[in-house]
Structure formats: structure tokens, C-alpha cells
Amino acid sequence: MSTLIERQPRGAERVPAVRPGRRRHRTEHVLVGCGLVLLPWLFVLAAALPATAAAANWRTVWIGLDASEAVGLIATGLLARRRHHLHPLTAVATAVLLVVDAWFDTLTAAPGADRVSAAAMALGAELPLAVMCVVLAARGHARATG
Image (cartoon, rainbow, N blue to C red; front, side, top):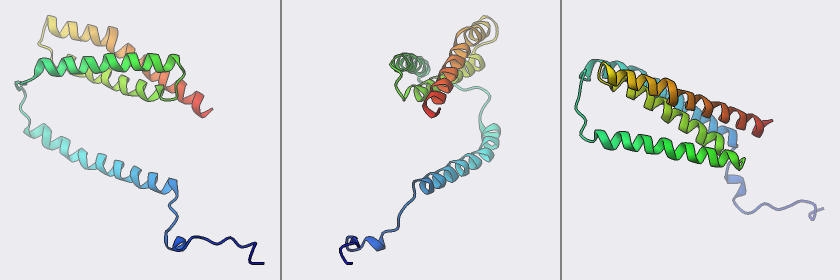
């Protein structure tokens, strides 16, 4: 009868089994908690930040953002063409970058021609590309789960 009972390694009883869902559940709580903590911070920022400011690395910031968008679009296109399972992730990340670019371009543009140009870029290129990326991500996710 002793041959039918498998022996566990010494000390195995002491190590509790961690269920994968449990760790994710805790992570989700941490993320929600952090998001809730940020909500009052928005009011602090609204009261404390100046209406205008000069940025030291203005050109570098915008070039870096646009370069990130270019890398995201290229990576998403190549991964989607190969039907790689990661293309929905790059598509969502790229969509977020495009929306952020449209938001900041439009809100930081000077009144007049600059603001019209920023709105035209947002409505004519950045936001439509973001929508395309979200649709691509949703389709890729549906394929992966379906």
C-alpha cells in the first residue's frame, strides 16, 4: 500500500499554494486604490498649477512623443501583419499616444492659425489613427479569446 502513496518533498506542506487569480486580484485592488488616491490630487493640481509655463525641453518632448507614435504605428502594423499575439497591446499603447498628442497639441497651441492647425491634425490624422488602432486591438483580442 505504501507504493501507492506518493511522498511529497520535505517541507512541501509548509509552502502555501498561491492561486494565480489571487495575485491578480490583489494587483487589481492596488491599481484601483492608486487611481482613487489620484482623484483628490487633481484638485490640488487645479489649484496650484500656473495657467501658463515655459518648458525647458519643448522640442525634445514633442519630437520624442512623435517618434514614439511612429515606432508604435510601425510595430503595430508589422505585428498585426504577422498576426502576432502582442499586436493588440501595441495597438492600444499607440492609440493612447495618439490621443495624448492630439490633446496636448490642441490645448497648448496658440490661438489662431496654430490652434486651427492643431485641431486639423487631431481630427484629420491623430484621432482617426487612434480609432483604427483601437479597432485593430479589439479585433485581435476577439480572435485571441474566441
